[in-house]
Length: 510
Image (cartoon, rainbow, N blue to C red; front, side, top):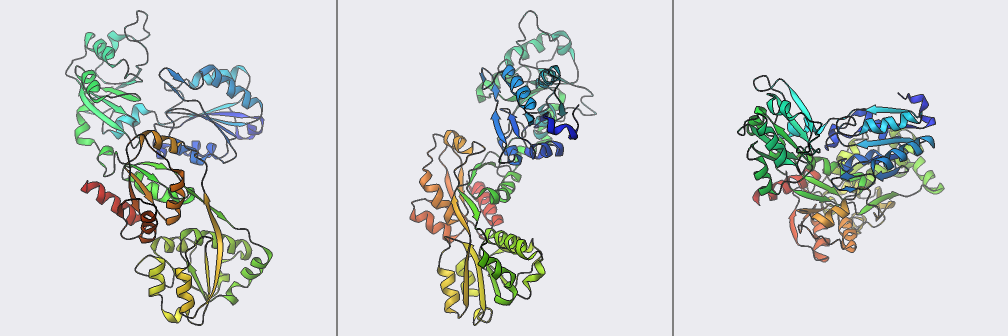
């Protein structure tokens, strides 16, 4: 077993990624991902988990599914040994738990044989998580006091099977088969032939704990036929037992309002998580395909001098986006080190989302319009806050001029500060662009005019489901119309919460 102090020698962490939902990842797993030099991850690892991997770290996809291996097990073992010998911190990220049908034992043996350090980090196996998310408790006081995990990957009809079908068929508790969809008819037949009642409840749970989870409930005698009718494919868990009868009563995950709805979020990578988390919480299958990246500008000597005397030069600070808020306060605190050096400067915010970002720095907002747009801010801000006052407006380098013009017409002295650049996002770290191309989506959400502008030239064409388009507000809608996008809905109010509520309403109405 490796200790933290040996990490500089090189160490492999065989980490369970859990069954798919990133929220089920252990704290230890997240901690190790954040300091990894190399991550080798599997087909059943949710790409969203890679958000915690440092930008400098190497990522290797080692996906293995039936008859399609990106890397063989021997190649994976060899890579682990090679990189640990080179002094790297290696995270071998495995779907579910490394030691539950995960071949983690073999990988650990290869490291031990070479005298190399490793640590095992358990994960939540899909044998427990997938049934739970489908509303099936694998044990229950009235139905089952035992649960048995069985590999379904082995051919149940081969003469030298390692499985004792006489025992498995006679078991009274819950039986959970991993990787058994391809051999489902043979497994069901073997169970029935060895004492399992054909009328016993049975279920399949596909992509358990993922937003695309799908459940099928039948009996041992009918499950194979029903699965064929539905086109039910791997990866799926096969559950046999009386506990399956509770699924109708306890189902919860697939009942959420956006379950089965695939949504593309185009916000910058730093902003997307807030919207994505709300959508995921309502059951949506979220593809984060950021089209823009926020790049803060450097603070030159003249700007540093100006920030040091900020309280003596500015009466009103105006924010038009959360990005501007974060860039400003990081710059201000880097130079001044104390938020109190803002002095008595008043603060105006364009809307609720921006206000929330300001308040995160423990600063009070003095004015916020009822209409959350730049036009609303210009129209509603009291004249006495602007006329004859020294204004500072940190904003994007491509900000629209309407607000600036309105403030100057009201008699304000405006310092318009281009504090960050909005540039195209060229990386597809999670493979979501490719997934969109292959599978399509129900909705693409545009949160700003710049996301529309940067999505448009990508010209991403999907061979799957053709999406509809949602807009955060009127400025975004205007840009969408200009570029020829039909607006499926416009958020009301123009906030993240309003965006989500409007999407739910559209989904329910559909």
